[in-house]
Image (cartoon, rainbow, N blue to C red; front, top):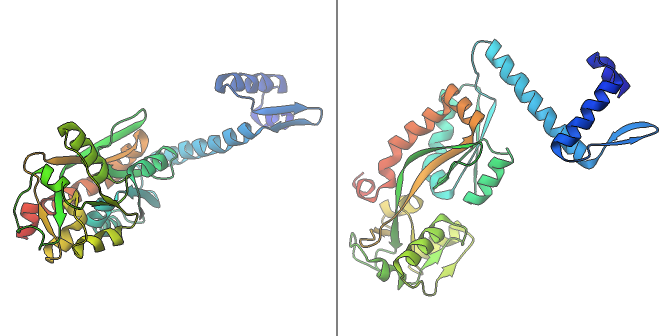
Amino acid sequence: MTRAAECLNITPASLSLQMKQLEDSVGARLFLRHSRGVTATDKGAVFFEHAQDILQRVADLERMIVDGGLAAPKTLRVGAVPAVTRMLGIEAISAAAQTLKGTTLLLSEGWSFELLEQLAARTLDFVIAYDLKPDNDIDVVTFFDDEFMFICHPARYPAGQPLKLSEAMASDLVFYGRNSVSWRAVQDTTTAQAIPLPGYMEVQSIAVWRGLLCRGLGTTIAPFASVRNEVLRGELAAHRLVDAPICRSICMAAHHETLALGREIGFVDLISDLMEKIKPAFSIAEGLAD
């Protein structure tokens, strides 16, 4: 404490008082004071680690501003749900490499709640998923609404024939886990429409899920983007739900300062432009016409 006070050019008593005020402010004991000096508590060690990160971020921001504008970071950590990574992943990584010189896009895939937890912990910089909401220091950019379709083997129903939601519910549905946006969207819609959700199959592998569908061993309701390639190859058929359409907004979320940086370096515009270009690919009508 004495050496720290000397470095700060203040008295040890003044520094000790400031540390006591810091503990009162955060509502936790940060230091253990004993005859040999002062050591950090477990909470103090965590506080110190986060304080170092905050100070480093402030220093980086000041340096970038002094150097004449914000520069793209070396890495951008982006998490997205499966339907989005399938349609956007390769294009986003390629565009980032060409547009954001010196920046590597690290793209990971997961459930929405997992990605949001990582965003809150700042192990992800951006999250692209469905129906994201602003929260505290999290901002959200909304791109467009994605339509969910009834998906099955082409032999099950005539191509292009729309279905009622009750008809879809009566089929042998299979979902990619209860944490998937498809399961949650179907559950919300059937509850609102008072339509019973009978027996269904649940798998935890996207490969198995698609395999069951392509072999005619199940049907599903999912974003068209998640099976677009299979539909265009004729392996699967997609049908609109005419009486109770299911749509969810594709959004991108980030902390205030991260989103501001993303706008400054052009990353937000990059993703927005890609979304605008591939938007027809998320639509069954235009997708099948390609």
